[in-house]
Image 1 (cartoon, one colour):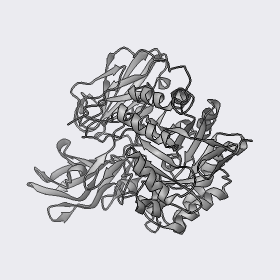
Image 2 (cartoon, one colour):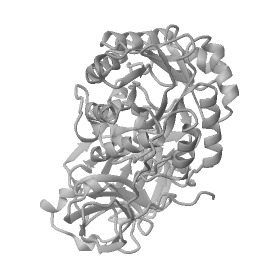
Image 3 (cartoon, helix red, strand yellow):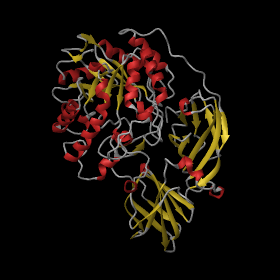
Image 4 (cartoon, one colour):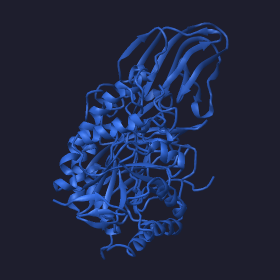
Length: 580
């Protein structure tokens, strides 16, 4: 079997120096039937390795569960990497950041306040041990010394930006080794003295994450890694977007020049991202450094392959650079013409204020979304006052729509630090639609509960006696099977719509959302993700493998209002303005 090791100054493959030229592909952000296509395009750009994170929260949505179906079939993904003749790097965390909901940590971890997340604490270590054993049971037979593609496994992720618990880091490394990992282990940190010292581990290769100033970054890394190969484990070639911001792009020429400097220095590299993909469903995270910013659905990242897997200017620039240091195939990826644009009418609206599609529960005090294990919920209480009064919340995480007797009063948003609204009167039915827009994935606010935090007060008095209904988003595309359409609900509160459309089943599509308000969309029961008129993103990616030749079904949950109830499909993405 092949042998892979860390030498005095190089990685060694069967005893010979080997420069890793890798690109990040997150299997959970790509339709499984597109994995082979993206991996092949990586090979054609000259990459010899594919790197992926492993998302604990997606694999384990509940304690005791480890799901490997569909987009989560890590074993299938690694075998497809091997089939293409490429190697693999696996980064299982347990924390991964990745602009993913909660940084990849399951929300259920935080429901027990005694659990010490990302430190050496028995409850957390017990959960981490089980998770890593589940992951490495898949990875173990796919290591290079057993005939598989896996060269490296990472311990934690940029831990020096979070803490300095060396006992914890050593324990994570021991769990990984104890689960049968025989390939070299690595850590990654931003190349500052403090982070490399706090996040590194003696006996484990340190790597760095950066996207510019290559000579000084490598110098900082070498200071903390006197021997062994130099590697940029995250060469940032783009960036992610947040709702209300601009679409981030970077210069292909400048990024290629930095990549050239890395490879010329003899360093190994993992391009983050080679292909970003999509935050399907409710997987996108958020940042909060004083202002909450929720990450958009597209994870295009201005990467060499765009969201639909098409080569960009950056692809060709990187390919030319790589050709100076390694063999690059002569073949270029085939380009398919974009699909034609067409529209269909949305019909059969169901108003969720009239029937939320779930089961009601009763509560003395208003529960959080975490209490209900919900991402979107409707809360209701009866007011028995009279004139106007101020409705206040301790904190809104992340958005609440307020209705009084079925009429909209207003919206409060965490992003704007809003927590109070004036009610025109205080007699009648008060309804609150509360939305989790994505859990913070970086910094001290990871793991915080979602929903309306603290008491809800009307004037000086706390409101009690609440009914709650979780809006079952998994079941929402099937609402029409059990509830009749309610056209009178048009435009008042959350409203579900549906339509059918015809395709050839072979072309990628993009669903335009710029004429809609805020909500979610499903095609053939698969949740494409969130949309929001706030932008910058104006389309949702519809992968061709989701589509059937002939008739397909679209379902849209609109939380605000639509200009017109029409769905337009087009052949290309619109990710918004690059400047504001």
